Image (cartoon, rainbow, N blue to C red):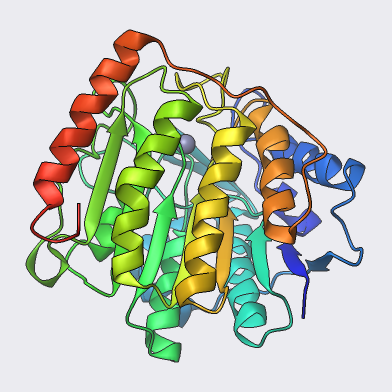
Length: 358
Ligand SMILES: [Zn+2]
């Protein structure tokens, strides 16, 4: 039991989004090529795992029957638009079940200790999908169909009786679907690091969105100014994420792994290198080894430029415990951006001081 599991299937390519859509099947082909080229496919460190389909009961823990039927119906009539951002093709419903099931399967493999941890190279992505699809006040479902990570968390709670799941969302966009689903729950600690929602889709993810009822204090948004680089990212991981998760002591760590905060991503304005991403995974792995016997599963969300390949390879190096064959130069933020980020840091500490040791 020393391997990292990678869930992948060529069937994920059958969710077709059209010629010019950034969330294309090509993304997964490029990601798989990068893993293959750098020695991460089926060797002594990595095991390729075929996905299974999620059952409707598993999906219903998170999504309404009405929404599930809508996705099915659009797919069955040959495809169409869930909304202007989110096209579906004929096989999208089945592929979306396979994406959610892929993450469920890798969680099962981690629980049975067949693999140490895992990464799901799945699509369509999931973190913008709320109970009925479009989450909170978002204009669209943002390329997402079923919330793969939320479905995994809900099933871990239901089937394993876990009461402390950490979902760390490092996608450049706010994980509004995940926030919506667990907003009143203390079983899931949701921490999302993302670009300032005043500057990007979906327009939510502010500090004051702290959760309600039992979930108050268990929803932590970290909105970062555009241009934030590795230095800022690391500071927030050290000063906010780590003190909170150490206190929370998760029984299972899930990561919404979007690589669109990487410098030069075509649809965002952040400036991470693969160093920032590897640091986030290193810290997540550290907390998993302290409190969840190493149980950690990451699921691909966004990532539309070279970051998808470069950061993925670095992250796989962290998960498998080897030094990365790719090395990026650490990125530094402009003083103006650092000034803005420090204010955000102070605001977060102030807002969550009553709940966590900040
Ligand atoms: Zn994203």
